Length: 255
Image (cartoon, rainbow, N blue to C red; front, side, top):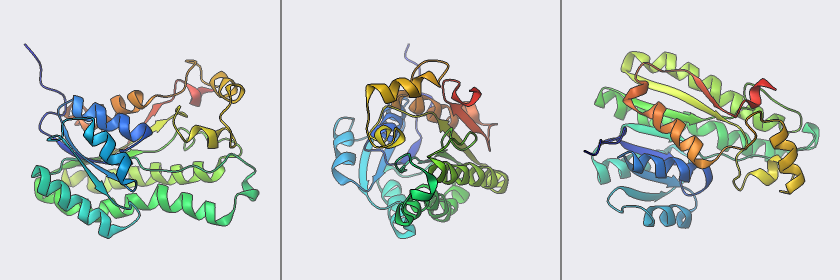
């Protein structure tokens, strides 16, 4: 007898779902029975992932996560397509090249803060009324292990993710009375398109080896690892869990 998925009947919005960790989250959610709206600024990426899955279960929406109006449109899109909204995953994010903190250009610093932090503001504004009406909901925010454990040369990225973690906890405390849970995932570096920046601009075997040396379990994160963590936090199995940072870091934070 087949068992229903842990997200059976749920509807989710996943930002940055067209690539990397976001794609891993989308695939896991669909595997677990959810229907998903991919909210991505790169239309082709979102549509490519949607086309590779059940078209009845996945829709792509092209929009900018730093604009409340685009969030409102994405929420309407999800409600029109699927009739409800249960889960929002704030995954979209960027990183700057690893370099001395006082040499990071101002526009790069501002880009990091805008794209990594402001979507939490916009999503809370656009989604809270929907969750209030539904009697509950779940936010899963993708932070980073650099939030609790900042390292040299990625300071502004770590600062942006520190804000994600702090906002997650604050919203969890504020929204709990409405049966809305808010949690964060803190991944170690993953073998995605962002890895080159984490390694200072070039993705080399040597750079990866140095990074892996600092991860006790001996490997970087995969999109599947983060998808698994997000699916658990979004599921009813985690119904008493709110305001946490879930480290998915292979022990990196212990070093």
